Image (cartoon, rainbow, N blue to C red; front, side):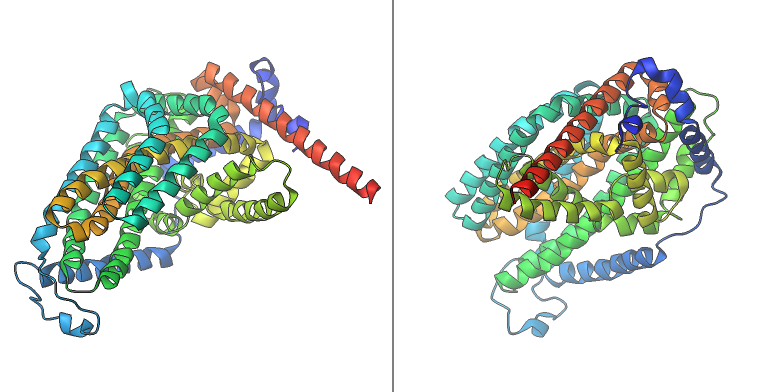
Length: 494
């Protein structure tokens, strides 16, 4: 990235020259607002993945109903145990013994998600800071409890999780002030749009309804006469399905909120008369119709790739001069960066605004960031990781509450019920967290499209972002020169 490209949006003193240099990007932004409003050019995309998701929901709904009914009030009510005669074992459990435990998980997860949304305007930053610093301790405590309860596998898992969390926080501790600034401004944006909060509540209610059926089937699996390995395999399949369903609902909210935030920034504020009427309804309509296939497709991959990218970045920054290890990590880093080009959360803003397919949106968003240098700022920001920590914390609290009850009722099923309850809590809290993440992604897209949009919304924040971008680009240039010099010296010595 050349210096001339990197300095166009750098400081407030160059605002007049930035205006001339960003005319085309400003025009694109204006077109984006019109595209979101008109819907005349909207086409259905990624229909195959829409069909796969809907078929998966129908098949899974039927399977969950059968699994739950088979042990409801009567053992092997539907006489299906005979199909698994080789792996069945005697078990006295019934669906209704475990279903209330999942009801507790749904209640705790919903309470935590609603509390997050209610406290979003007044205590959000304090909650996020608390989560970042307490998560390592919480994971360590759960690990000790698992070892005490002779759940050695989960004790090791949570101990490794605590260690990784601690190492990650150490590796990004210098980035947290800027991250909290971005999150604070994103909260400010979302808090000015109470209608998107209502959307989050509505989708949380929809997710809770689906979890009622999902937990009925999961309770039937836990109560079944299948051996422990058979129960675990079925629960893994159900958990992957729940994860995908939760990700689809989260990203649907993501598209809706991103569209609204983009409109607000394009038109200069929530009260601007130029904002099209019924914008929220239109954004919701696009999200659940023409863009839903793209949402289903992207939801399969983006979360896993993002998490892997954060971990590799943290490890890469702390390797030092170990050239062998650095070479291996760099290979993984470039592989993940290639995947990020086609699967990134910024695609959902492009989907919301322009109605593109997922891969097209992801590629365009990443090329926009790289061509403007904003990718250096995004790589430095850890807001997505901080919000994920909040989601994990919500899941852990939910799993702990449910696991404690299960410990007193059925100790041999603690790990099964506790782990699946944790996933339920993560999905419900994630639906609340996604409204802030949507604002973060929209702010970065708008900053890359036309920095003056951010300047018009919050001049002080614009200056802080521009100064940090300038620092990051200088840091990258210095590292590139250092690597080049080192390479040349090695060549001469050879």
